[in-house]
Image (cartoon, rainbow, N blue to C red; front, top):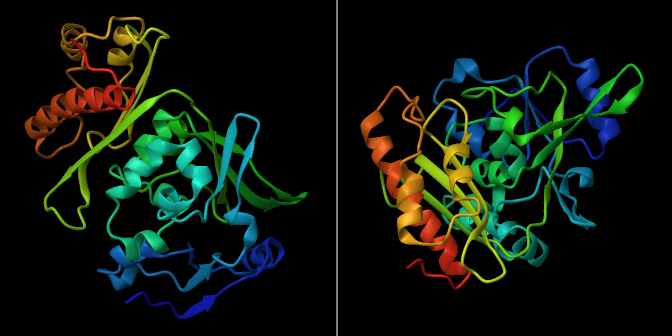
Length: 293
C-alpha cells in the first residue's frame, strides 16, 4: 500500500507552488503513483507527503502545434492506445504501450512519471529518445513561474537520476510528428505477464520514395547501460544503404563492442541486442510494406 503521513491534491499551479515554497520536508510528486508502489519495499525511504497533481489540467494537455505533438506529463499510458491524436502522431508510443504492464496500471501510469522515475528500462524512454523528444519543465523562482527545455538525450543521467531540481516538475513533452515511418518496439524480461523489461528498444525507419533505400533510421535501447542510448553507429551505416538483408547484416557488424555497460548478464544482453536489432528493423520495414531481399 502507498502510504504518506499527509496527502495533498492542489487544483492549480498556483496552489502547487504555494505549497512547495512553504514546505521544507520530503515529498513525492505523483499523478498515478505506480512507480512509488514499486518502491514501497523500504518504508524508511518513504517521503512525508504525497503531492498529487492529477487534477491540475495544465499537466494533461494533448495538442498539435504545426509539426509538433505536445503531450502533458499526466498523459496516461493507456492514452497511447485509445487517443486518436496520439495514435496518429506518435504510433511508436502505441507499440510500447501495448507491452506496458496491464490495462489497470496503464490507466494510472503516466508518461511523465515513467520519465521522472529514470529507470534504465522505462518502456516510454527508448521511443521518446528515438523521436528526439524534448522535456519541458515548470518551476517557480524569484521572478515567478518559469521552466526550461531539456533534450531527451540529456534527461536521464543515471539510474533514478535526472536534472530535475527540488520543486521542478515535468510539464509536457514535445516531439516531431514523423510521417511515413515504420516502427517497432521490442522488450524482454524474466516473465511473460506484467513483464518489467530487462532490455527494451525502439525502431523508426523511413524508406526513400521508391522503397529501395533507407532514408532515415533511428534505434534506441534501454537496459544495456545506466542511461538509454541511441545506436548511432548502426543508424549512420544504414542511412542511404539499399534495403537488403545483406546491408542489414553488414550494419549489425557496427554495433559497438562496448555498448553493453550493465554489470549483470552482459553476454545475454549482447545477444538480445543483435536479435532485437534484426527483428526491429524487419518489423519496421514490414509496416511500410517492404520486405528486404
